[in-house]
Image (cartoon, rainbow, N blue to C red; front, side, top):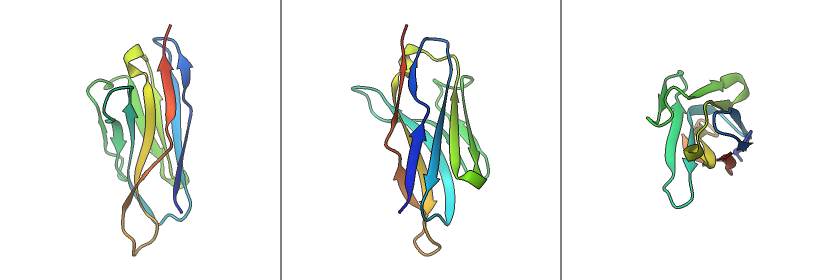
Length: 121
């Protein structure tokens, strides 16, 4: 069974920083895409940042220049550095990964439970 466990959320003031982590565990043969989504109350879930197995990254326009995604393939972990946080970044942040538990099963979509980021003065 594959699990994604997030950590690092919290309450910060505008302009401050946070670092989110998401570790994949369980039976893992291959991990392709890893990314972070967020969902604010009353809004749809949106992709914040993603990174491929080869290290290619993409970001939502609203976070470009402020957030940085990275991954440690040896530890099956993806990180999201959030700098210059704004109140509009407040949301539940979810980790997402495309993981093949075995060679025969192929890639499947997995989600973490979410970690809350609140930006408020």
